[in-house]
Length: 278
Image (tube, rainbow, N blue to C red; front, side, top):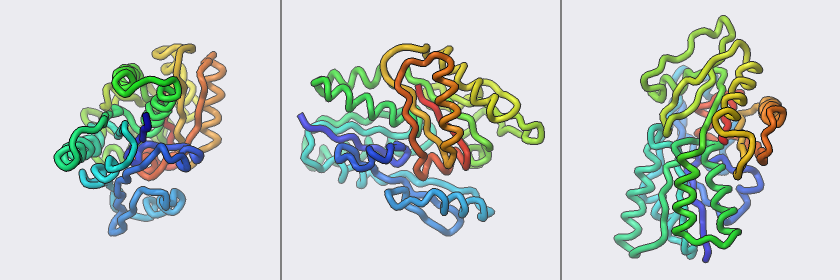
């Protein structure tokens, strides 16, 4: 059986995976002032961060159209897995679902699973890599679908950002206040509850915040087990390595993968942001 993994552009693939024909990205669009940027392979992170820094407007995102997802399903592969950013953060999941209906109206049934990751960035990549492993083991579509949904429900996402401002301005901190203790260098440790952003803890200084984030992750998910930890960083490879070292020091025995944020994750994480999925 042949398969393809379709992700919105919050699926932060590694450089090697971007060259893998099993993956296809359906990009969101980023808006900064009057500038419209398609979050595709041409995304320039440094230029985007500069544009955001110089703009007085809050950057925004627009999800892909249902037709864009429908086109991605029109391929020779028999099994299609679609992984989207949390439906609490974007309309990508709904667009993917409508795209499936449009596809089936025109072409009939196909094995298409639309997976709301209830996460983003590294969380989406964790799920994508697990699907590849399951196919390598010879598992079938129905079994993989069941297991990946279970994994999604068990997976946890954590993040430490230098600023929550863009999340706040875009209405992504429902029920939470943005953090105003920057003068004291207090950094919040954030997480997600079924795709809804929550505050888990805080620490003085980013290094201590990373250490606390890793402690919480190990406490909640354990040192051992299947799968991997994925660290997505926004222009912060040294910080990603610091988090990797913290996890290893706490005895994490799983593989640890580091990837760089694409456009959507860059917008929300901001320069220096770290997102961990486990």
